Length: 359
Image (cartoon, rainbow, N blue to C red):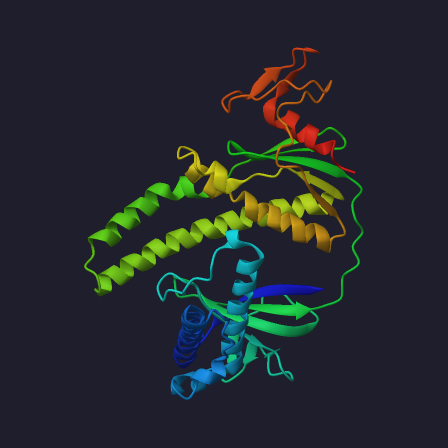
């Protein structure tokens, strides 16, 4: 089993300069190879098979960085091409922007050249970098991805190959209905329903973000004060992201710890965000990230995640008698079944119907 562990790095000024060089070279190689592939295809209608080594004589600065960082940039480009030809809706590979793309590069462990000793991690070509290892892990280090956030913080994600741990699965089942007013409404096989409140991370900090954005827009481009204002705004966005991740990880851990079979509805966020009144709220809840976390955590713990069919009418069926009562407007949060007379909370009823799909 491959598992990634993320830690904070505290590089020196020299190491920061090296990391910046690696970030830039990996981005440069990716863009240059992509551009050459496009031009070659226009001329010959054939795919160009190029490698980073072909560019080192023309651009000697590429020799100063870890060669595996360039090789992994090539692999990322090849993967993007394969994904495009597999599914055109994914989109054609795009050029990486210096200011908009994430600053990161990946290197591989070869012959033990990546290891942790005395609160420092050994990396190729740069030596030991101070690391805050807040938890231990066992296994063989396969690769590492070094990244820098927009606030200037450095992190390393260590991919480790380790044995699958023995996990005693819980014997419970649960149905999960996702929403906006309540992030999730769950019903288990004991017919216990729980509403998990939406943390609304962006909504609660929106005024502070707007204030920081206005301050940034007033600063002269290229000035030191503009860079200070940019950093203030980036920190506020980073805090929102961290709050959201913390909530999602805690809730997904709790659900996968307590349940063997999990049934969740399938939502197309991209389609739902075409409703401009709800777009910001839908983007804030991060349903797709929550589903992703449930999927891999359930797999780790020997559980099963079932995604209901996209058109399954979970909110239209009476969970008491099975009568289908038709579509309902979003503002209707409770309804009475015309067949059996049972009054339902819309979300709890949907979670009960999803629970029926548990095998």
